[in-house]
Amino acid sequence: MSCSGETMEVSSEFIQIKPMILNQLKKAKYGVSDHGTVELCHWTKKSFRNEGDCYKHKFYGISTHRCMEFSPAGMFCENRCVYCWRPMEFYSAMKMPPDKVAPPDVIVTNLIGERRKLIMGHYGDSRKDEKKLDESLLPNHYAISLSGEPTMYPQLPQLIKYLKKLPTTKSVFLVTNGQEPDMLQRLHDEDALPTQLYLSTNAPNYEIFQLVNRPKYEDAWERWNTSLEMLSKLDTRTVLRITLIRNYNCSDELIPEYAEMIRRSNVHFIEAKSYMHVGRSTNRLEHSDMLEMSEVRYFSLELAKQSKIFSIMDESEISRILVLQNQKRFMDRWIAAYANTN
Image (tube, rainbow, N blue to C red; front, side, top):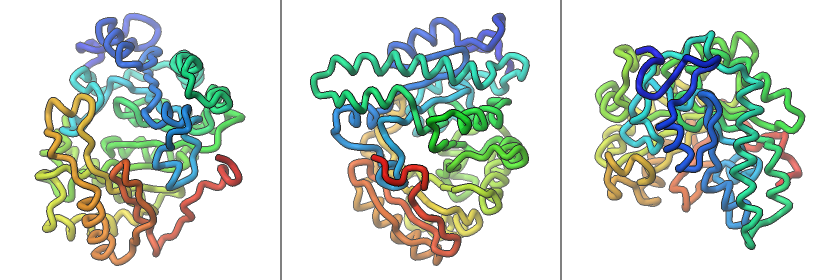
């Protein structure tokens, strides 16, 4: 499908999100520039008021209030995951024409500007920590993981390199659905790997993969497995993020398949997290499809035991997540750039 679908226009210099969709995104408190999107997440806003931090702060040390979550491919994705809480019903295009994408400096500069507009409204909050708000205006952590699939952006290697060269940058996280293994290879070949690379992992076999991810590519399972097997060779921090959905992908009999899969990946960390009944996912799933924390613990403990190489590292009960650490391919949990910082 071309970019002349329902959500994109290519008549201007760069791909644009169509006005109707743009208005809906702005009502949902997204910042938008060309085909890029940015948002202040729930935990960033709580951090402004000293009411808590994201689990990535607890697990790895990142500064929640200085995190910029964004995507260079806001309305592009190859999957229609059943649990997705982003506006995926607006996704239509499967390719980003290389000659119509905004370059990294334009995307980052404009989205930082959009993010600042979103932050400004918090200065009027009497509960604010003004020092944190001031610091937040210059991000030091970039999470390339918002709406859409960032590996579809043709200039992703250049984008990550650009972010790493910014004077305040301490870390760059990239979350991918694994549908573009060639892009992961490019990141490796062009010395553009992020600080930490996440592969969304929601199924241990083909049937459940199709049920949960609802992919558009006919060879989606093969693409994902290619990405999985690359993780053991990439010279960066690697994570499998497993989203657990009741009655879909977390029964006891599936744990041996997951264990075999994570041994193949040999990643540094596994994040096992309950599906959360928020956003657009509430149109497709029920509140009861979320797991209790005790169930996430049980799944994680069994997975660690059966993997034979992972152990429980930490947990965040409020986010219903546990993180497992590879004891065979060990990586220090803390990102060194955040030593002696909040």
